Amino acid sequence: MHTIDFPSSYSSIPDPADLATLSQTTEIERSFLVNVAQHEFTGVGEIVDFGTFLGGSTYLLGMGLERNKRLSHAEKIARIHAFGMFGEDNAKRIFDADLVTQILGGPIKEDICVFEKVVDRYRSLINLYAGDICEIEWIGRPIEIGHIDIAKTLEVWKRTWAIIARHYIPGSTILIHQDFKSITLPWLTYGLELILPYVRVIRQIADGSLYFKIVDPIPDDLQTKIVTDDFTLEERIERIERMEASLEQQCTVIGRQFPDATIGKTAFCQYWFGDREEARRILEPYKARHAKFFRHFFERD
Image (cartoon, rainbow, N blue to C red):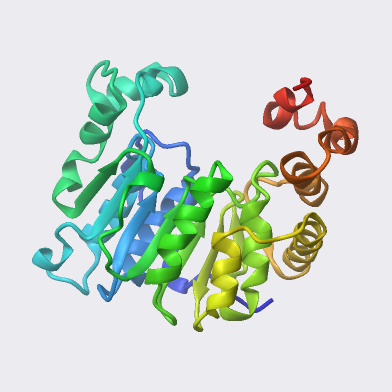
């Protein structure tokens, strides 16, 4: 695995007050989203927020793009593309009531209305794709920056990677795996391990998010393997073990720690693709420690 460090320009952390928004990202993750759009985006491609939720991550990318000195204001218009499934009343359900009032100015039930309120300051920079990403066509432009926080199911991950596979820019595209350290989503790990020779991983893993840059063209057969999820159970587990070992040896975790990642991801490979009883057996010793992540998986189907 080849690694690189965070660019020195990222040492400039925006005022935390500026980062206040309805987002489940941490302060470190928010700072990175601002900085990557401000310092890395050149305009050769687009910025895509795969999983905007209530607009918090899109707002931060908008803040960075607005501060970007490479592009004129006209060149920044509609350069951020946000995908999101919108429900109802998630702001009230998930976030502190005082923060909701501070950001929104009062209660708003529909998630899409919350999104519009949150991103209002940078709305001219943003295109919104509301609905199921599996049913939405990408506009066909190259992707320079991609923030991936939507791959909660295998089918959505496959669709997300299918878009990226056809539109990444070798030497330029930066991808942010928001859920990389989540043990419940093993496809993010074994899929990335497959393409490690063609990327550079940023050595600092910030609060569980993995950042990497695609530096060389990825062979079509490998892209197809990810898009079709053509892995045996044994291959998934082997790739996860190799990937996690490489990260432990070569990367530094900033912020939240994620113990038992290899064990957890192995168990969830069993859960999704193998023997669910074996998954429960593997996870049983860790049940109490990670209850909030997989409590319901111990319920019998």
